[in-house]
Length: 55
Image (tube, rainbow, N blue to C red; front, side):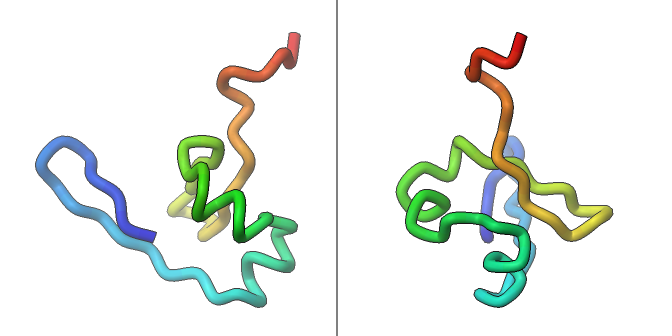
């Protein structure tokens, strides 16, 4: 995963087995990365709750 934070480029590497164990739909991650968030401290990807009717 590569992303920009202002002018700084960040990256974090996830293997396919890691994504599978986190139940991350890889095709959705590729097609709509804005629907996910990365927790760098825990080395995990989560489906973002932003924009969802969670209340």
